[in-house]
Image 1 (cartoon, helix red, strand yellow):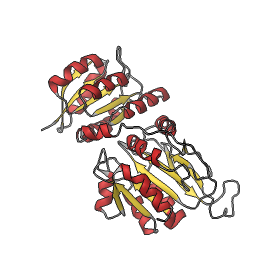
Image 2: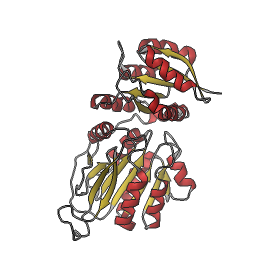
Image 3: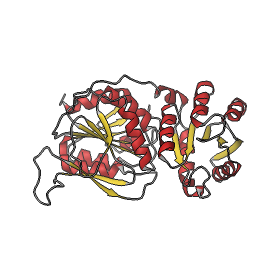
Amino acid sequence: MPIKVLVVDDSLFMRTLVSDMLDSDRRIEVIDTAKNGAEALKKIPEIKPDCITLDLVMPGWDGLTTLKHIMSQYPTPVVIVSAYSKADADITIKCLNAGAVGFVLKPSGELSLDIRTVEEQLLEQVVAAATVNVAKIKSLVARKPKRARRKLIGINKIVVIGASTGGLQTLEEILPSIPSDFPAAIIVVQHAPSRFFSQSMAEHLNQNSPLSVKVAGNNELIQAGYVYFAPSGFRMTVTNRSPEYESGLTNHDQRFISLAEEEPSALSPSIDITMRSLAKIYAGNVIGIILTGMGQDGREGMKAIKEFGGKTIAQDESSLIFGMPKVVIDAGFADKVLPASGIARAMADLINGA
């Protein structure tokens, strides 16, 4: 049976283009369209779609308001189709926080004549979204209180987390549970198609984390008590050479972030590249974690971490998308397989040598 999709967009032109792209895939069938949120809400109980693509900017209810109505009345996997700006990124993060499964960028704003350039990404997102159990979406909405922060300078242990679709919601469960005196830094490599989204995700997660969450900067000193987001559009690695001196190593517990610009994409930044770099620099003092997402990015990185003596954790089948973790588990590169609720505790125990 093909995946039944409802396309919601105020533009007839965009509804037609998005529908044509989806219908070109034999796995998908567009069963209806809607020009605004109110119309979509009326159609959902009648047509019972497996997935909904939802525009952000519409007359009447905007995308976020529409999403909240959908999730409260007729919970259904939703893929946000948004424009490419900081404001759109902020709203998209709120949509993911409210239950959206994934998002695809309109490459040229609300009326994107070149939207076919993201056709493959749209198809992948819809197919993945249709596999998501709505109960999993609901379980990711819970929030935890913010805790007091404590910053520590100088570390020789590090955690690296790789995530894709569903990563924001899962990180919202993990980061608030980390102790405020966590004696290591955390690097997060979350697939995001633009730097706006990396920044918006970091700002959003910073609100409820006991650690300071920020987008990593080039040549930045890695410090305990911080969560560094790898920015989309950059290859992020780590070096033990001070950027202030061309030669000479720093002391053993000083490491610096190195960013090399590249074209943003649906699989940017690369989890494998960052994990392999950390494995070489930190050796057995790395904990690698792979969370929800599509594809195989992170498999080779987790392998490298194990080969250099580090420890690895993969999220279990509670993942919103059990793709990347399953690949790691099947390859034998996961020392522990845990639900999101158990990852923060396991991470702390491994860092503290328990």
